[in-house]
Length: 105
Image (cartoon, helix red, strand yellow):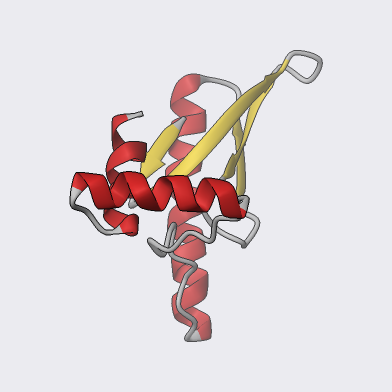
């Protein structure tokens, strides 16, 4: 995994082509990059993020933010109730209890 300006790149190696190829994970837009060495793939990743940000600036658009901080979660009503009770017992809001629990996982 690579990280640059809040964006995360996932890299795989294609042994048939002899290249690394990657994709930026935290955006709905498609941002890819490739290289034949570790240095090349790291540089290509940073350049791809910069190109994406410049493209957005030129078009007057906001780039996709890596994450909004909001998560929609579906669960059974029974589990929802159990989680709620655990949060109340811990003296926390449901959001705070879930965030704390995920943070410690």
